[in-house]
Image 1: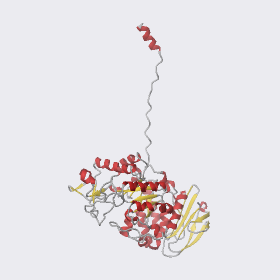
Image 2: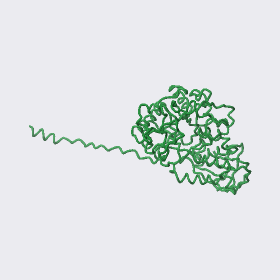
Image 3: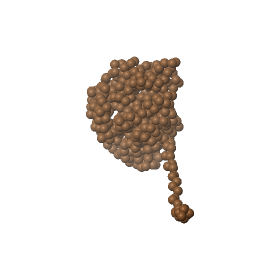
Length: 461
């Protein structure tokens, strides 16, 4: 019987062997992920302390509909955390001297107030990014009290931030350097950034002094941030092309700012922009784009207003900022012709007037949104120079993609110029003059009479 039973078992069909096919790992990206909305976005930097009479989140929230109407897409909030007291500069201190990465500056409101601001922005279709300060904290920060091992030592003592050569930056006396050689510091920083993506529902970060933090930290941080949501990452740095491979979607166009100021002052001419663009295209990966601006908090507080820095050339370079290969940014008050150098360490609210520059910037924002040729990085078109008989003084170019085209001509000099453009056949046709009511017929050899710093922006969309 046993034999029979055994034989019967042997005669049963054998179950198919289940072999698990391992799930292939996701393909490695050649560049960091990017939120869909970033491709044609306009940034707006908001100095919460100075933006309104209230000087808080509620004061910003009140003006969100106005910002939406202006045409900006991304609200960049300067640091919102409590500010250190020990070694503080000025009466209220620098927003970049962070005391607690998990807390809100009580001058600005509560976490509930912050969430209300972000929620209201999102309801309007605006994104919100936080200014993040990973390189250092205040001298009396919570981390310094509870985790002194997170901090760098220089000659055995805690230290102000160290520059790229490992030397103390002495005028940053109100902040203390963090040590990214310690894995615990890295873990804590990543968790703090994740917290704001989760609990604050922010859409990304503008990273202060990103290049003073090792790039391999950013390689480590980006997947951890992406696991929460795909953030937009902007590096305040321009000297590390690998940032575009490790973590960041855009970086700072400091060189553009310097070159344009020099052209405005007569120290350089329009040829310098050709040299700069060639340099940038060679230095960075093909998908790079930079943030361009004529004002930000550093420029405004320490160097001068837009009028002081650019004089009569300001609008010409604002036009260039919106039409060059990159992402444009407005600093709060530019739409009002901001004539104040806002105090960096004390209350100094913007004295809003009649928003004299609103229509000018609205037109540029709308153009960027609607004409794909002007989108950022690989989403848009490469800049193609248009030869003129006065290239030293007249900067003429076109950008064209998928039937979208823009032609831009700017007199970058203090004298009137008569110039003839040498246009290719694919550039010819009827265009709308962005800053005029007329339709302009573009011909092969087109002659223009341009006043000092005059600009012409033509679009076929």
